[in-house]
Length: 295
Ligand SMILES: [Fe+2]
Ligand SMILES: [Fe+2]
Image 1 (cartoon, protein in one colour):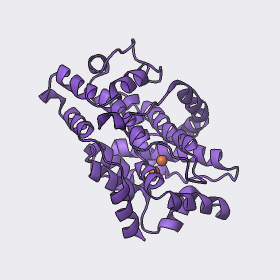
Image 2 (spheres, protein in one colour; image 1 turned 45 degrees about the vertical axis):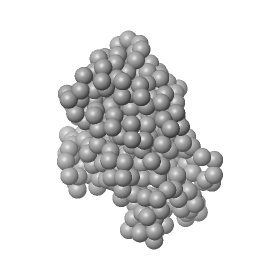
Image 3 (cartoon, protein in one colour; image 1 turned 60 degrees about the vertical axis):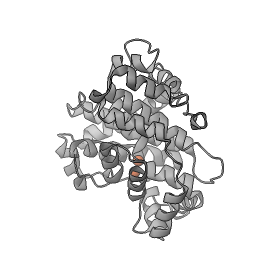
């Protein structure tokens, strides 16, 4: 089963356009380029610049003023933050919603991803880590961490549908259902494969691969741990959206303690989350990048 799933994902995964890959790689080492060079690379990627500008002006990122162009974005929020927003927009374009899967609701799943970003951002704030783990970075991790599930939706929709159907019929959480259907495999392993194929940045690959096992993270364990806890909180929120069975994910106290946080902090964030996600859903237009324009 595992090999067949991984092989199918490798074969069916959309191609990351060469111009987008070159841009993402350049943004890993922005000092090697001028701002104008990087801006022209963005401009060469179809409607990416327009999507970037719209996302930054949506109100979600709380920019100090309106952004007019990619060059403007680099100057206002910096290369790393712009890279984060670009990655979110690119992913949306690579995995367009398709209406063929029963049992898997993309909008509810988007709420889980935004919820993960926001819960992680609130955790980082409480832990005094917000200067490093800011909204831009946590948003990218929120949008990308479950890339394995999005890849399943795109490449093996029937398998993903079976996971959600099993969760409902057996009254278990989605992660338990995933284990039942995929066995040894999970969306972290599938996501890591996607990152490798697309040569996504190392920090994203690390988060995608280890967000359910932060102690195994190869680097940046603090960021992965924050995302693990944020994801856990957002899973509880997501399960409530899916059913009223009261399904919850256990939270290891020791992991919270590593961040200097308590269960009460996690509860407070979980209570605040639904309203925060509603607000983000209203602000974020999340227009997709149209890669057909790159042909
Ligand atoms: Fe996950
Ligand atoms: Fe998740």
